[in-house]
Length: 136
Image (cartoon, rainbow, N blue to C red; front, side, top):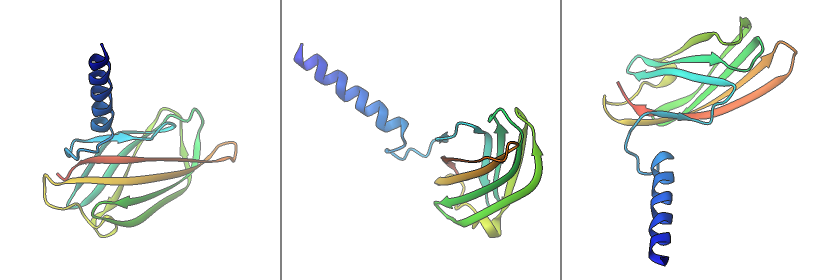
């Protein structure tokens, strides 16, 4: 019975480590986003394209995005005066000079994204997370 519990614990720890990307399989995925959701993304030699969805439940008036990570220089994008309605998607592209372009096709990457946004009520909120995948 003791061996059974030990094996179960090892399996659970292995699954948690695999899902968190510790084994570096290069598989894609996102983590950490809640109110601003990542719908789709691609990192190529021309830059990083990310499709965001406003899941905050209120109109967003200002967005400041900060990107950093594997093969990417620190890069910021800011849009002021926008009216980004709840449930709507918006694609934001960072060109290769700012994004420092992804490496060779097939190599893995991890990009940290910090999103600071201003709600219609004038409150500032922060979302952060990670994009993982393979260069296309």
